[in-house]
Amino acid sequence: MQRYRTHTCGELTKKDKDKDKKVILSGWVNSRRDHGGLIFVDLRDREGLTQITFDPKVSEESWKAAENLRNEYVVRVEGKVILRPDNMINKKLKTGEIEIEAEKIEILSKSKTPPFEVEEIEGVDKAKNVSEELRLKYRYLDIRRKKMRDNLKFRHRVIKLMRDYFDKKGFWEIETPCLTKSTPEGARDFIVPSRLHPGEFYSLPQAPQQYKQLLMVGGTEKYFQIARCFRDEDQRGARQLEFTQLDLEMSFVNQENIMKLVEEIYIEIAEKLTDKKIMFKPFPRLDYDEVMKKYGSDKPDLRYGLEIEDLSELVKGCGFGVFADAIEKGGVARAICAKGAAKFSRTEIDKLTEYAKEFGAKGLAYIVIKSESQKSIKSKVFELQSPIVKFLGDELAQKIVEKMDGEPGDIIFFGADSEKIVRDVLGNVRIKLAEKLGLADKNKLAFAFVVNFPLFEEGIENGHYAPEHNMFTMPNKNDLDLLDSDPSKVRSYQHDLVLNGYEIGGGGIRIHKRDIQEKVFDLIGFDEEKKKSFEHMLKAFEYGAPPHGGMAMGLDRFIMILRDEPDIREVIAFPKSGDGKDLTMGAPSEVEKEQLDELKIKVVKNS
View 1 (cartoon, helix red, strand yellow):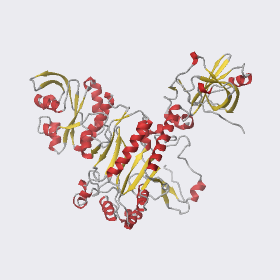
View 2 (spheres, one colour):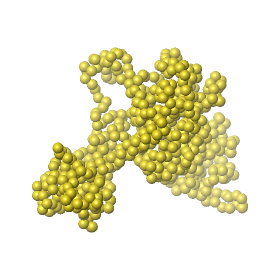
View 3 (cartoon, rainbow, N blue to C red):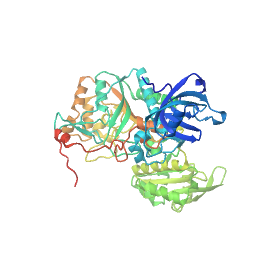
View 4 (cartoon, rainbow, N blue to C red):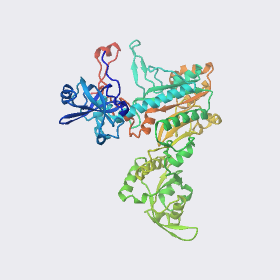
């Protein structure tokens, strides 16, 4: 029986040199160099590179065969480990002190010329600027690249660590169905027709939410799963139609129990598998209302300051109509002091203004702090440059700078409008400023939990509320009476884990009583027909449901951040393209008419 390898291409070192020992390597031709009398081939497998030397004095047959090798050919090589000359040692490779003196070579598979260069030489990724569409079409070639291999290996190690951790903590890994029932939970379902029940459909799970709650009713107490989830939503850089999450649920726990458990595993992953610095241990627990005021977002990036300050009282009734009108109408005036931003050109400031308009701003007022002079021991006077200073008056403008801790070289940016618009505008301007000022250090990890979310989103539509998180989150026990009197003020036991400006997980304590769940269904406008979609859960709550809660943690997004990738597609083996297509397989695609007939489905094409 033929043996394909004794070692991998990333394994052999000078300690393996043995004149009587033969080694066998198999892999892909990464590159070939013909130096006249000698031919050098870098052989690659997933573990690394080894240089193979073909010398006609050692084996003329192998040397001749090597003349016909091309990149990406798959070959099997037999030979001996020899030391490289001192001036030929490659210190960048683990195998860089040795090479294999080839005695036999067998071409196992030939390759056409690839549509893009796969090999990486001296750390240069030749496919870096290849179009994403081409890379996804030939993903099986793209995966051969070192960066992709490293990302997939890292992903494996994260999941392995998670499985080991939860096993030690007494959790059971339980698989839940991928063919389930379509229920109105928010996002669009992917539906699957049933052949055995014509006219009826399964749904692919948006998440195992209902199943994991039913597992708690079933007494499993500690469940986890590396779960596949499916949502028919528009694609984004940090979202796919199908994605993977660490799903967990526990009985007889409170919020702090859940957060401590998740904090522990995420610290372990970051410290064992990366060189990044965790900024805060333990992770901060941040109040939702405070976070929205200070950062304009419920997923704040805490690697830098740029906190938003409220100036409403200070500028109330001032001569600047934009501020005064906003506050008179019940709105707010807030600001960010961007340290060192005075170096921005007028063009850059104008671009920021246009960016702010995307989030509802009419403009973006600002004050540039040019220099200072000492007025007295206790006060400073700043030279300010801004069109709005003449409307504010110099005294008020100086007070604003003082409140914002402004210094020469800074710019203060303002937002004045409704609470929601100002939050959206300054929250997004804050992110853009950090990007332009280089404040978001990729080597830092700023984890935090956000808690005390409202149970419902702001505003009422058609007399009904929309859940802030999901419809199964337990209302805060101190606010239960408000479900009848003022639902908009009800807080929930929701908790989100945020990291470097992304939400990487969310969860909460769940409703485990039928009457409370039905009350929430009523408030979000479910009629009796929609309630029937959840009758299985409501009925389960009648048979002794324990208090329970958990989290769902997005693995793709988390790994994307740890790997410094701009898009989750870079950490998924076979992702969908921006328009939701699997370019490798050519999906979605039409199916045979016979299949449709069997399913009693008729396709109506748009004219």
